[in-house]
Length: 314
Image (cartoon, rainbow, N blue to C red; front, side, top):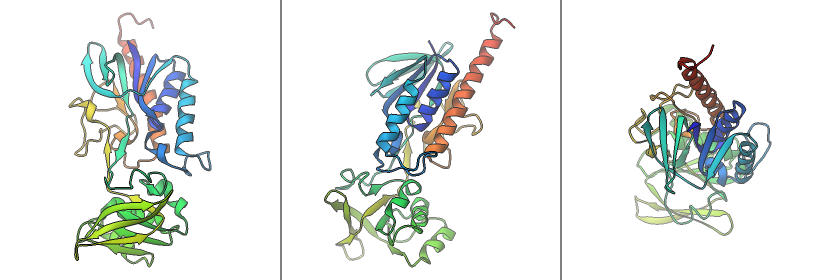
């Protein structure tokens, strides 16, 4: 039985793995892929200590750092399907049919951005189609862009783009914006912003990079086209928490509710970190810090169990 199983190879999972290794915990890290959602980013410019790094390079660096730790085993290219309680801990079942047992768990399985599901979106992912305005707004300096989404995420993305983009098309499928009224006011008063309501995005087109977007104007039922160089998809995200079943307390969108000091969940021995949790700010640096806190909390949890054991020698 392992002391700790970490689920996820993004910034939260990797940081937890490094600290688990330093604490000499018998650890297994299971990840479908390294790097998390940022792996598709062509340039990450807010990873502290690095002026610019691609998502692929960041994923490689995270993996190298974890593999450099002694006593940590790694299972890559496999996906956790279910977790159940057993005597003294937990059992983790994977897509490839493997079963692993551990005294504690850290769930750092991240999330996935909601996609539009239209032609060109996947083709240009990381080549003009992006899902994080905080991360990628500076890349679009002096360029025309579109933000798809009329809720708070879309409005905040528009504001993130104010210092950079030349023109910002806010494409909203509903008749009116639905975000916070004060944020709406700030967006509406900017001369950079063109709001297009009742618009259903149909296609993102280009050659090697994004060159424009097509949408259905639901008022006149005509397909219209905008030439631009970037599309920010801001229609929300989905946490990768389905495999937890009903084991943990979650909020209405499926994020794991945690103690933000320790990463503790509603179930003793299970900790969580990163975008799978109810952390407000979905940022790589914050996820890494949360992963560290979860690893240290798991270590202290195991230490307390050991101290309570009759065999423990003071």
